[in-house]
Length: 57
Image 1: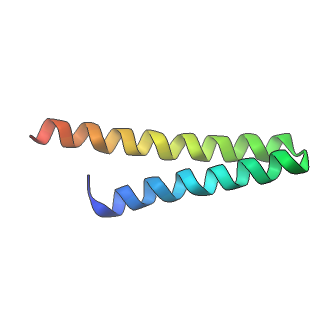
Image 2: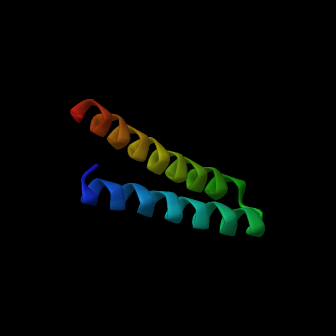
């Protein structure tokens, strides 16, 4: 996994989690769902890169 993609994936996960939790505590379900989607996209990006690494070996 390249360092840039790994950092991008982790940043999306953290930002998504922060947005989701802040919006959920404020009662904003729409923004909470968007934060959850961002977090999920970060997890998917990380999984994709790990899969690419597995095939390189």
